[in-house]
Length: 100
Image 1 (cartoon, helix red, strand yellow):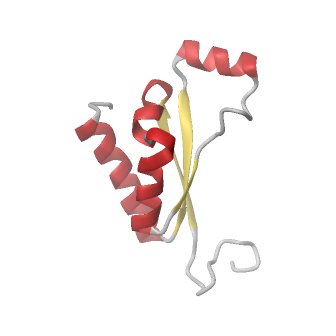
Image 2: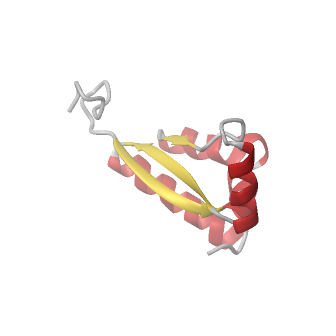
């Protein structure tokens, strides 16, 4: 597992979890300048990746906004870190913003 990149320095297994959040709510969940994501990463030790706006094709981005497509969020870390990160995402989505 370590040779394939799925284990951390101490041999802990790193998991990859993917969640989809509505495009219309992504900015509120991520926070200004990624503040909410950074706080979740800091408190859990997970790594959270989001698609960058620059990497999206202009035509595809326009279609996604028009269709209110989902944004794919990837969370990497050990089991506890990924589960707590997902819980915090859902907590923010439901309790703070009324999404889902």
